[in-house]
Amino acid sequence: MRFSRMLLSVCLVSACSPYSPRLDRSALEKVPSDYRAEKFVAADAPREQIHQRWWEAFGDARLNSLVEEALQSNRSLQAAWSRLAQVREAAVIAGSTQYPQIDAGGGATRNKIDDDALRLQDGTTIPSKQYYNRFVVQSGLSFEADIWKRIASQKTAAEFEAEAVQADVEQTALLLSGTVVELWFRAKELQSLLDVLNDQIQVGSTLLELTELRFAVGKGTALAVLQQRQQLAATKSELPRVQRNLEEVRSQLAVLIGKPPSAAVELEVIEGTLPDLPPLPEFVSPLDLLEARPDLRAAQSRMSGAEYSIASALADRFPRLTLGLSYEFSAAEFSDAFTREAGSIAANLLVPLVDGGRRRAEVRRQTARAEELWHSFADTYLNALGDVEASIAREYWQGKLLERLSSQFKLSQATLRESKSRYINGLTDYVDVIVAVQASQEVERRVLTETRELLVTRARLYRALGGRWHKNTVTPDGFNPRENNQSKVS
Image 1: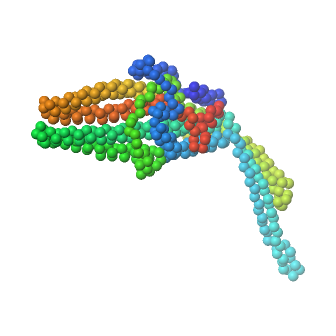
Image 2: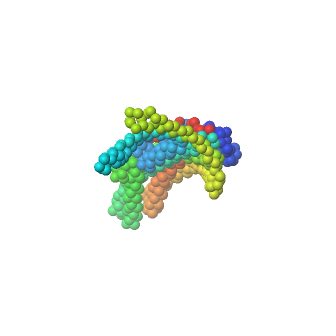
Image 3: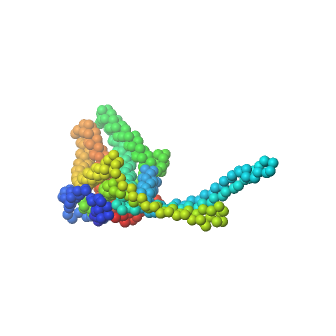
C-alpha cells in the first residue's frame, strides 16, 4: 500500500541522518473496517466496480464529452498543471547540490606599457611601447559531502511536495468533474421542468376552455372561469424563472469547459430526460480510502515531506564538509595557452557555533509544521469518512423520499380525476378542482427535482470514494509524477 511505503521511506531517514521520525500515527490503527451507513444497503443489492471515469456510470454520452472537454480546457485546472510544473522543477533545484558543481571559463587580457627607454646623446628620448598578452582557461569543481543527508532530505521533501501537488491537481479535476456532472443534471432537470410546465399549460388551457364553455351554456360560474384563468397564469409565470435558471446553468457549463458564456448556445439540452440511477458502486474500505482519495494522498505526501524537512533542519546543525578543485592554464600567446598549468585542491569544514538560536529554532519550526500537517491530515481523513457515510445514508433516504413522492403523485392524479368528475356532475365547486390541480402539478415538479437530487447524491458518493479515475492521470506534457517519485533518497 502506498501509505505503508510512505511510512517506510520516512523511517529510512533515520538510517542516514541524525533524525528519527517523531509523529505518532498509531491513531490509524483504529480505523474501522467498514462504514456504519452500510446497514442501509441491502445485502443482495447489485454492485458494480467504479468506472475508470466515474461519470460514465450514468450512460450519458453528452455528459461524458462535456466532462472530457472540461478536463482538457478548464482554465483553473490548466493553472493547477502549471503549478505542478513549477514544484516539479523546484524538486530538481533542491537536489542539484547533491552533485559536484563544475564551472569553466576563459579570458584574455592585453596590456600596453609606454616606456621612455632609449635616450640619445643630445638628451632626447625615444618612446618605447610594449604589449603583454595573457590567455587563461580556468575550471573549478565544488562539492559538499552530504554526510548528514541535509541536501538529500531537502530533495526528498521537495519530491513529496511535488507528489502532493500532483494529488492536489487530481483533486481539482475530481471537483471539476463533479461540478460539471451536477450542472448537467440541473440542466436536464430544468429542461424536463420546461416540458412538464408546457404540458401543464396545455392541460390548463383545456380546462379553461371547458369552464368557459360551461359558463356560456349556464352550467358554470364566472368565478370558476376566473379561478382557472388564475391557475393557468400561475403555471405560465413559472416559465421565465425556469428558462432564466437554465440559461444560467448553461453559461456556467460554458465557463467550466473553457469557453465564454456566449458559447452557452452550444450547450442546448435537446432531451430533458434524467438518466436512471446506476447500480451501487463497490465501496472502497475506510483504509483503502487513504489511497483512493486525492486529498488524502496529498495530505500524506505533505506529512512525509515534513519529516524530511525536519531531518534537513537538524542536519544543518552539524559540521558541513565542502571540497574544491580548481585548475588553470595560462600563457602569453593563445597557441601556448595549455603549456602553463596551475591547480589546487581545498577542503573546508564549517562548524556552526553561534547563530543566535536560528538553526535550533528552525528544527522546532519544522517539527511544529509536521505536527500541524498530521492533525490536518487526521481532520481531512475524518471528514472523508464522514463524506462516504453521509452519501450512503443520504442516497438511501433520498430513494425512500422518491418512493413516497411517487405514491403521492399517483394519489394526486386520482384526486384530480375525482374532483373533475364531481365538478362536471355539479357535486362540488370548482375550487376543489383548482386545489387538486395545484397539488398534482406541485408534486410532479418536485419529483423531477428530487430525482435530480438523487443522481447528484450518487455523483457525490463516487467523488467521496475517490472516483478511481486518477490512476491514469498524467500532466499535459506526459509526465506522471507518481511514476517519477517512486524512488526516494534514503
